[in-house]
Image 1 (cartoon, protein in one colour):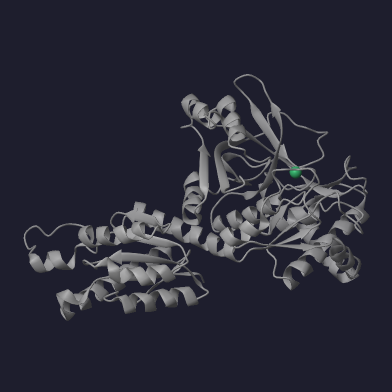
Image 2 (cartoon, helix red, strand yellow):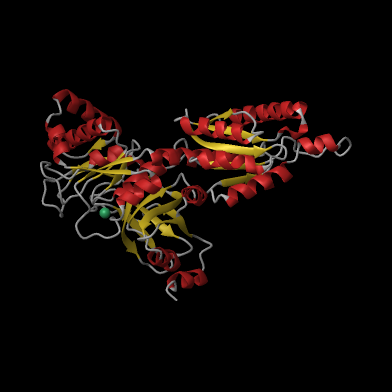
Length: 481
Ligand code: MN
């Protein structure tokens, strides 16, 4: 279970009685947080920081514990912040500064100097806030009584985003083949991805998968076919085409386990040794939380794995998608998003059908794929692009909608959505921002989750939604002025 360490601050000026009370109050607080957030995270109390040495020790514990995804700090009393400098310099994990109090109300009748010295977060948290700002550490501040629903929701969000950042730091992407030859936005600085986000972008030949696919046993294929038949409706007579995909998924699963990979890419331009482009194989793996990017798109592959991890335990679907085509009926504009084959099964509104159709691109055998209509509801569309000297995340609010009419001849899965605040501003803003045609769509995550991820990873963020105005669009379009 992932954990956060809770490190309270004080000092030895107020005597042992006060420090005992600080530790006792913190225990009550941590017990409460564990009771409320235990389904998401475990919180563990560390010794109260009274000196620089204790702070360094606490931060070393947090850094050396692989289960620890972040740290919560809170100043119960005043805590002179020079004693936090060396410890904070050690911390390389997400930091939440909880600006709260043990007591909710002021005891007007009984308050005296002892009470005020013991409970002075208003004082101590400002001193501490200064040093975190002075050190330039990206962090989250949650202000409010710790038992309030609002504060709890924000701490939960921090825990989920911190877990996703831990996944990011351990993300290893297998790129089979390279970037699709002339595509720009899917390319970028792989080295910088590893420095900034921890992504190991590693190359393998697709022949590795072809060899593992060839070696799949009849028993393994039968088991995989049983999995497909239990989840999906077989709507083709071409069972051999499905078995071919079963081989691919078996191969990818073995490769993923052997190489400790949580995301991969392929490209239809390099399928040497494979008869089909992986369709169901990729779709089914994505639904299991494996990141995927087509055409060598390692950035979206990693981002999809990270955002699927962030959404864990929430209602809704999260996965890779590509912007494809529009219905431009004025005032009712809709987008149809899909891919050649690889739409994650998690987006399915109903039980997907396994169908086999020719693929116009790539010159390979007819691939088996899952075909379905998409889920509906409020969602976000997120992408990450390389701007040369920095990365940029673009997050747009969207409304996923039921497709207005059947599309009986479209042989791929699809989702449909409405842009916000409207088509003109929403899609123009995406274009001005340099947003990719590959993105992650989620009905589980919100703009606030992505904003926190961007903040804690120090990534530029552009948000698009109902609050995006013509004036904002003009500012975005005029960035060279
Ligand atoms: Mn694509």
